[in-house]
Image 1 (cartoon, one colour):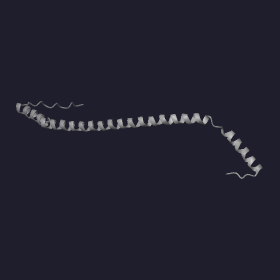
Image 2 (cartoon, one colour):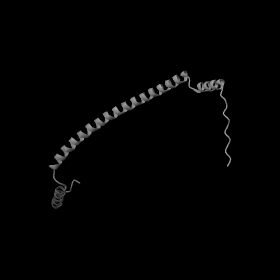
Image 3 (cartoon, helix red, strand yellow):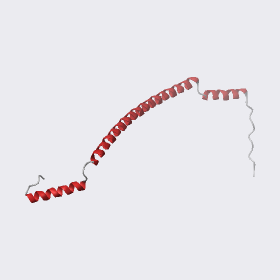
Length: 116
């Protein structure tokens, strides 16, 4: 198999080096460009900061609303406990149905027309 020929090294002149360095500097960002990009980044961060402030405010509002809901639930729990305590003293459904059956029987025997 044949080996590829190596290219002969070319002598680099001072002018060649100067041209390479100039092209490198030409492709490097200028201070004005960098400053403009940093200013853009600063504006974007300011926007992000404002958005986070809005989110913080929304969380605070939500927290306040949850506290109100919790207070209302505590009030409802207290009222329900009172109702449960009061209902405990009322007759049971079976007893009520038995009494209604007896009243109907008596109304029929006495010839009284029911209010229902």
